[in-house]
Image 1 (cartoon, rainbow, N blue to C red):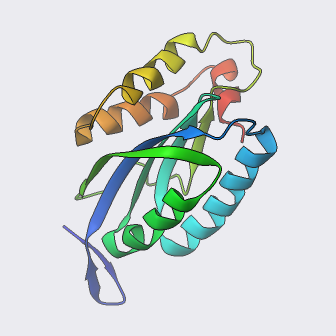
Image 2 (cartoon, one colour):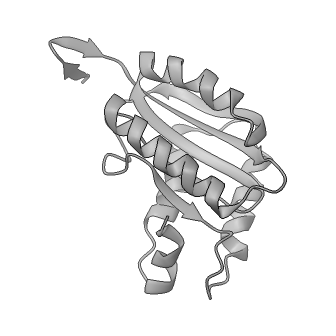
Length: 157
């Protein structure tokens, strides 16, 4: 099943990557990334989720494959991070993050919540060469599924 836009069939694809934030990245930088991403993603029907732990970014994106082909070089060239490693890039039948033009979990946020276990999950992903689609979706859905008010505070950006 493919999405249809203006009568043209589109190949829906997902990609996930991990990268290291440049030293000194500030909260204002993260907010700027999110603001611009949300604007562009809305225009180009890109959905996804970003996790930041103060050192690493982990991101999953879903869009038409031609959109991702154009988007990935701009992500790689962004000087706010380095050492980008693509963990997953494959076709999908339907979106897993349909409601998010760019959701975000900021584990570096000063909240009264022990995020060490969640940060440990990111460190586990850093050590991976690749992720299967189910593992990638499960990883990012974990951050989406926060329910308590303190946990929800992580998603305020």
